[in-house]
Amino acid sequence: MRPVSVWQRSPWGLLLCLLCSSCLGSPTPSTPPEKRAGSQGLRFRLAGFPRKPFEGRVEIQRAGEWGTICDDDFTLQAAHVLCRELGFTEATGWTHSAKYGPGTGRIWLDNLSCSGTEQSVTECASRGWGNSDCTHDEDAGVICKDQRLPGFSDSNVIETRVRLKGGAHPGEGRVEVLKASTWGTVCDRKWDLQAASVVCRELGFGSAREALSGARMGQGMGAIHLSEVRCSGQEPSLWKCPHKNITAEDCSHSQDAGVRCNLPYTGVETKIRLSGGRSRHEGRVEVQIGGPGSLRWGLICGDDWGTREAMVACRQLGLGYASHGLQETWYWDSGNTTEVVMSGVRCTGSELSLDQCAHHGTHVACKRTGTRFTAGVICSETASDLLLHSALVQETAYIEDRPLHMLYCAAEENCLARSARSANWPYGHRRLLRFSSQIHNLGRADFRPKAGRHSWVWHECHGHYHSMDIFTHYDILTPNGTKVAEGHKASFCLEDTECQEDVSKRYECANFGEQGITVGCWDLYRHDIDCQWIDITDVKPGNYILQVVINPNFEVAESDFTNNAMKCNCKYDGHRIWVHNCHIGDAFSEEANRRFERYPGQTSNQIV
Image (cartoon, rainbow, N blue to C red):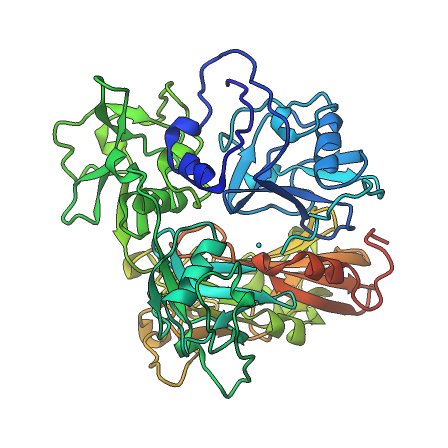
C-alpha cells in the first residue's frame, strides 16, 4: 500500500474528502509521502475502559467523525507522537488488540509509521486516511507519561455534545445532547428551523433543511434534557440558545425533536446502482470503476458480504437502511453486467460509500465465482434499533449456586461453561451470575428474526422455538479485555412483554406465534429463567467488566449498532458480586470513564 500523509483541510474540505474516493490511499506502490506540519482540523482523545486519564484507546476526530488507529506496525515511536498530540510529554508504552475495548466507526489510520520526532501525526507515513483492512479488535492504545506539556490546552476531555440518532440518511436524525455525562433528547416545543440550523452547523453540516417534531426520527429513551429551545440561528452550540430545563411531567419522548440538514452534493450515488430487483429498493449491487473515457460497471463478490456492507450500499444509494445483505443473487437477472470488479469488501457500517470500505483493490479474488455469487441488497427507509435497559441489569444482578440436577436443560442448550462437561453429574453445583435484561426497540421498524418460521428450531427441553442462533452475548472480561467467562442466549422467544401506553402488542410466542419486538415495546428476560446468566464457577476473585451485546453477529439490520453493547464494573470477592456503573457502549464521556474506574470499594484495576 502507498504510504500517504494525513491531509490538512478545512472542515468542509474534510467532509468532501470523506465522500470522494479520490482522497483515499491507492493500493499501488508509490513514493514516500509529502510531510506536512501541524494537526489543525484534527482532534484527539483517549477512550475506553478501564483506564487512567493518561492512557487509553487513541481516537482521532476528522470532519466531525471520531475514529481509531489500527495496531498494525504500531510502535513506541508512534505512541510518542500521539501522546504529544494529546498534551503529554512522552509515551511510556502502547497497547494492541483493543486492550481498552474496541472502538466504533471509522478506522482512520493503518500501518502508521513514525520516527518519534515528528511534531504531528500528519508527518508520519500510513496507508492513507480511512484506508484500512483492520477491525476494531485491532485498535491501538497508548500509555502516556503522566506529565503535561507546558501551556497545552487539554483536548483529552473533549465532549462530541450533540449527535443525531435514528436517521436513514446522513445529516438527519433525532437530536440528542450530552448533559452531566448522560445523553438525552430535546422536546419539540417551540422547535424551529433556527434551532435545527444550530445543530446542523455544530455537527459540521450546512444549515437545516427541516426541523422535525413528534418523534419522526423515532422515540428516545431516558432523559429529556431541553425544552422550548429558542435560537437566533447564529449560536455556536445548542447549549448557547435560551432553553428550559424540564421535569418528567413537561414532555414525553413522543415529542422528541429531530433535524434534516443540508449536505453538499458529492455525486457518490452516481457510482452505484441496483439491477434485477422487483423494485428500486432491491437488486444486485453494481459499482462504477475506471477513469475518464474508460468507465464501466461491475459486480461485487458476495464472499463475506453482510449487513454492514449492505448498510453502506443502501446509504450510498440514498435508499436508507439495509434490511438484508445477500451473498447469492442468482434469482435476479444480471443483464449485460457480468464482470466482478470488487472483492473482499469489509465495512464498519458507518462509511458513506463502498469505496471507503476496506477491499482487495484492483486485485479481485473470489472464493466462489460466477454472477450467482455476487452481492445484493434489499433496502428500507426504516429499521429497528435495540437498546438494553442498563439500570435493570445493575439492579437485578446476583449470584446463585444452582444444583447440577436442575441444569440438564441448560447443559443441553450449551448455557454452561466447558468445565461443566466434566462435572460429577448430578452432584455438585454451578455458580451463576444472574440478572434480568430488558430490551427496547427504539427504532422505526419492528425487530424481526432473520430466519423464517420454517427454519426455527424446536427445543423439547424448554418447549419453545429458537428463532435466532445467537441473540445476545454475555461476557466477563478482565480489565485488559481478556474473556474469562461467557454466556450466550439464543432468542428463546422474541415477544412484546410490555409496550408504551399508545402501542399494542403484536408478537407472542405461545402457540407458535410470530416472534419479534414492536416499535415502542420491550422484551423482558427475567433473571430467574434458564440461560439468563453467566457461569462464573471457574472465575477467580477480582475486578472485572460485565459486558452484554445484543444482536452481536449483526444478523438483523438496525439503524444504529453503536448502542448494542453495555458494560459494567463488577467486583467479585469469591462469595458476593458488586455491579456498578452500567452504561450503554456509546454513552461514555471522559468524565463517565473516570467515574467508571472508581466505583465504591474498588482499590485496583488489577486482578487479585
